[in-house]
Amino acid sequence: MAKRTTVTLEDDIAAQLEERARLTGASFEEVINQALRVGLSRQARSAKQKPFKVLARPLGLRRGLSYDNIGDLLEYGEGSHHR
Image 1: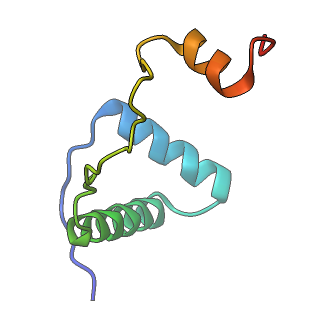
Image 2: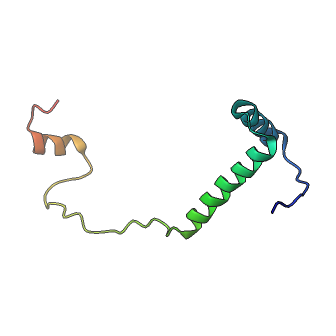
Image 3: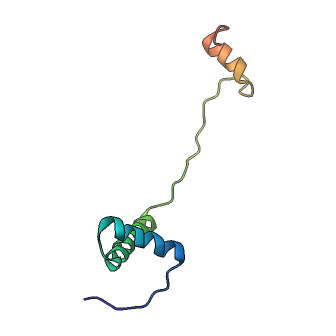
């Protein structure tokens, strides 16, 4: 069952939909319905996903090393000829 309705599209959206209809050979109505299906599906999936969280953990940094100077760290790890 289809529902007939009037929707005002912004110019850029209408142009993209018309271009998609022209390229695919589908009707404007088919292109709009497909775009809405895809958009609503993605929206539903993203609403179900839990937000990404980064859990902090100790890095086990070695005592006696300065982590502020990458050059010193490279020399310690790779020797004096690291460049």
